[in-house]
View (cartoon, rainbow, N blue to C red):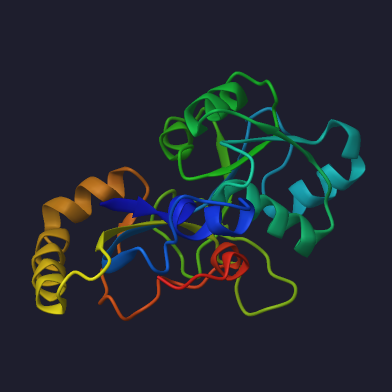
Length: 224
C-alpha cells in the first residue's frame, strides 16, 4: 500500500479512534518522496518576502485568511507552526482538497497565503507569488523561494511524505527485496524528473529509518 503522512502519522494524533494502528498493523517498506510546503500569496498582496508578509499580516489580523486542504492536514499544521514561530494570526478556511484551495487564491478569494506543495505550477506560471519554502535545504524550484524563518530551533522544516507499507508480519526477506527494487526504480532519472515536476523529490531509505524530521511528524509522535 502507498500511504502518506496524513494516514500514517497525523490521523492517529487527531482522531480518537481509528480502525487500524499504523505502528502495529503495517510493515514499513520504503519512503518514496518528500515535498516541503510552499508559502505563496496572490500577486496583488504587496509583499515580496516572508518578513514583509509577517508585518502585513500583523497589521491586518481581521483580514488575514488562509485556505487549507483540510482541517488537521499537514499544510494546516505547518501553518500553525508558522504562526507560533512568528506571532501572526490568520483564519483558516478548510477545503475538501488542495486544488480548489489553490484555485481560490489564484482567483483572489482569499488573496492570502497557501501552505501546500500544490501551488508550485501556479507559481511557475506567475499566478501566485512564492515567498518561502519549508525545507531544511534550498530547493531548485521555484528559484525565488527562500527557507522560511525560524526563531526557536535550527531549521523550519515541514512537509508531506509518501511511503510504501506491507501487511504486519511480512517476512523480512520479502520486505528487503521490495525495498531494494523500489529503491532502484525510484532512483532512475526518469522517476526523479517526474516527481520533481510535481514539486516533490525522491527520498528512499531502509525500513529501519524514520523520514526527515518535521514539526508535523514530531507532533504526531509516530515513527515510520
